[in-house]
Length: 270
Ligand SMILES: Nc1ncnc2c1ncn2[C@@H]1O[C@H](COP(=O)(O)OP(=O)(O)O)[C@@H](O)[C@H]1O
Ligand SMILES: [Mg+2]
Image 1 (cartoon, rainbow, N blue to C red):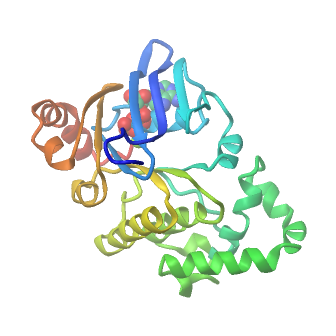
Image 2: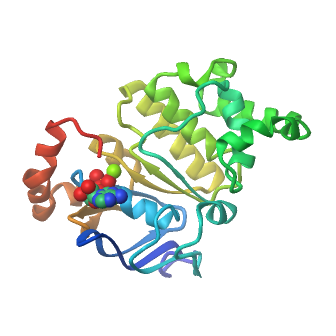
């Protein structure tokens, strides 16, 4: 980017809708995720954040609207097609393969994400052996990067919630990702692990040029990592700005007081 020019956009969402029957979970969202940014996405539970991620990542078809990546229309492409373009998402609830080791969980990623299910990939372990050495080396690099090298032989099912989130992030590093969507990476994670996750995101952003869009309720985490921050409420974009601007925005405070704190008090992870 030359100085004075507008930033390049990795993702552009135009007037996106996703309705469930008569309910408008995503109700006309337009936003941009600048190339090279770590963009935050916040909002009370039920705001439509995960649904927006699901539509962008091809898990749900949109009711209407358009999504482009690097200027190319990607609306409605399947997750494995997006995966090949370097668009990855992690889930709010980690979906590791519990009986495989941590290292194996990473080694099956390239096959598992190419349109196969994890189960199929697991049954194809014989075929995977052909590329095993290279995959193994890569997996171990990823684990070192994430400071969990000592857990390589552990069954993934035995990891703590926070370690599973790190593993989830690690899955995005087994391939050449361009833009990664992280849904509540910090949910149920202790402060130390949350900092480790944050550090890994920053390093991936700086050293590997990953663009991120991060949903997270922890505002300290968002403020440390994200610029800009986009706020959603009731299916719409409510505000956009720096974390400092967002935290002083009347409409944002109102939205959180109206529904967010109540829902969060119930302890739901919707
Ligand atoms: N598959 C679905 N069918 C019906 N309603 C849904 C479905 N998925 C999400 N919703 C509703 O859409 C709204 C937004 O949900 P979600 O995107 O998960 O919000 P957030 O991630 O911001 O908490 C919620 O009211 C939720 O109940
Ligand atoms: Mg959600």
